Image 1 (spheres, helix red, strand yellow):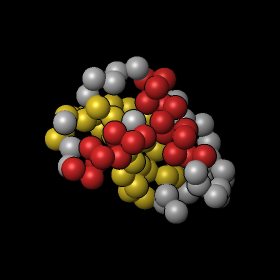
Image 2 (cartoon, helix red, strand yellow):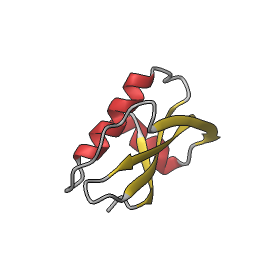
Image 3 (cartoon, helix red, strand yellow):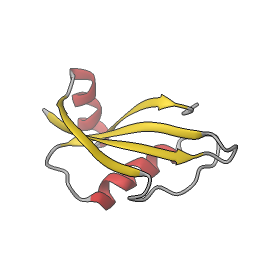
Image 4 (cartoon, rainbow, N blue to C red):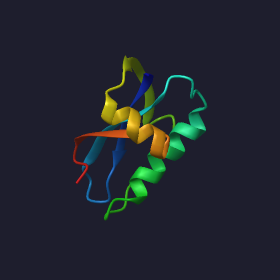
Length: 87
């Protein structure tokens, strides 16, 4: 499965900047859908964050998904790769 990688930076309430990638099937192109996946992920965090819009989230590239990513996408519709300050 080919996936689109959306590079995302969102400010936390403590001032740190979260950096994570939102991975979706390459056929998912509606930005609002992708941002909503990111918002769903942010709601799972125990801290508050700033907004997630096109200013914070941009298409980066496409890549081939691993089996783990494919399974997560089948279950939730998206996959998150946490990079910095996500916990």
